[in-house]
Length: 82
Image (cartoon, rainbow, N blue to C red; front, side, top):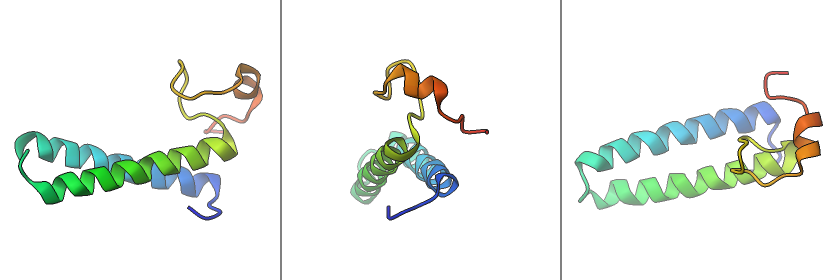
């Protein structure tokens, strides 16, 4: 996760979220597939790291208590679509 731009981090987060959801759905129907479970755990951890890196640099991705932040920083920061 070395020095990525905001848009690069958002894209990587989206990609890893997609993979994690797809693996989760697959594991719903194939719970005994240990390779898929290992992949899911790997991509989930990578996703957490990407989110941590994004929030450390650019602020929270989610509101309602999912991302710890000072409310003032959240309100005055640039929004993702700006």
